[in-house]
Length: 534
Image (cartoon, rainbow, N blue to C red; front, side):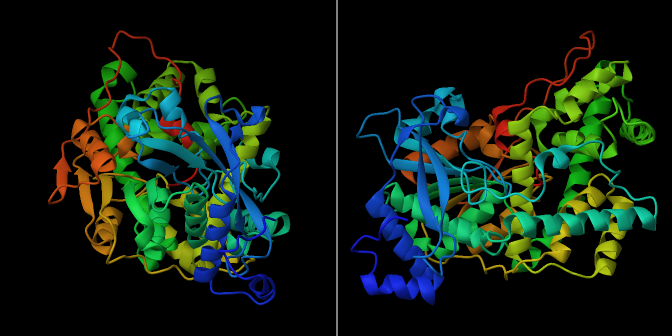
């Protein structure tokens, strides 16, 4: 444990803080002062982390419990690449979170090394800094189940046919909650979004920054909103993209129910697009026919898992990327089309877990563990199965694509074995302008969330991508948005009023004569995000 700096607290406070605790607001000040004094020992990244020079890596120590700032600490892994412009052009560090909960931001500096065109201007002014939030990856990680067991396929069909099916899923969820307690119980009470926001402020201090520049996508927007609430005076620039609804009553049970409705909307958008391009994909020339093909595929996989590994659960995990991201529209349709044309292996390669990918499976299990731990710790969930059953049965009738799969993923929170907090009231009346970016038909984070956060952050500006629905708007080419993001990061200026932008270019299906092919390589955005819900 690092010794506190003289400015952090007098020596006698250390004993008090370790034994009896202090307010968390005081604890984070102590931790930030200590981190500012220590800085970050930047070095070449460990070879097994997979980040090449000139990206550098380091570790920031933060309290496990901010009420005990001199007690047990955990590691937060960080990486960076310096700004590409001159010393005079530099405006500090831009810290990134891609979402989750459970997502790693460590790939963010690669937007510089790969010369991503959307980030060239920002990278002249900012060091790009990524981090693994508490519990994730190269930070002190948590686990809930053996990774090989977690990825084992095929899993049971998420859509129950009987009460027996529901009982089986309830048993699995309770066992998963027990596994989290057994394997990671010491961290579970502290796996909250407010603690991640406090960690972010300690990172800010360790970077030597007086104020924070932050880009948060998806769940990262909730981290941003909580940070703005706890540290309004520390915000310099903040962009939140694809926004979680921050209302206390939404976190997290209702948010997941609302997500089921939004996913169905975007699933329907994709089916209509596939039907429009039937000459290429041959999956049906109406959305209804495409849906019929989907039901046929699900039934076939349920009766006889494809390749012995791909059942309905694996199909949903693969196909859900189409409602998530426009970049998946073509590859998912191509893979499905290839299967219908007789290429079974294309779908197996795309949808089945790779049991030999030890590192990937560990990351997948860890991401799901963090997702569950944060959502369960952030709020008190319903414990009555009757309520879960009623709400999800009702929703499934009209929104069947994701409802039950989402329910089972979150059900461990009903029998959670660790402390569950009350969500904080997000909002700030005195804060630097925050830029909010949102597509109108986002499936993972419905549009109402952006509107709500906009109302809660004084002086914020909302950019709406009208008619679009991809998740993670700032990584898409749309000059109406890209130019405003650049302008805000470089000057701090926002428009005098909210802005509505036309949608980015829609995905283009290959020409009809092109042979159907399997899924193409994922986009950089997809590679950054874990296989979780937001």
